[in-house]
Image (cartoon, rainbow, N blue to C red; front, side):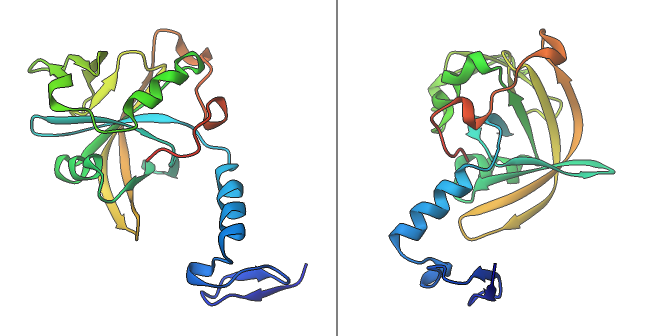
Length: 196
């Protein structure tokens, strides 16, 4: 395959319809690129955040381990999202990994949780949108239904045009009652193509 450099210096296939703003070749190329990017294997999680008494749970798909020493995880969060504000101010986050049978649950957290639907005690135990939650060691909420979880302290925030890439050092992790054998929900198990 013959390649050339695009306006951003990245290689572009010869005969490609790249061009236009941000390397876009128009609506057809944009649709194709979105479909290819959505086809990248990815998980689907619920990210908990907290700053003071404010808490939120948000469906998120851009999550990956980025380092092993120390163990660090990166998450992509829309820069104007309530969650991003809480993660910046609170300095931590928690990830609830769900079982495949809980696929419908992720849609409930596609929008911020209204304050009146956050019912928690001083220890962070209670409900959010009617779902049982408890506090991770970071103070951020975790779903009681999680089959696995991670809690992270924020160490880096990279501001991008539409999103922020947040790196957190893992300070706690574990499995739910089903242990390590539970099948963890991925994007392919749902009709969703993005969360974050």
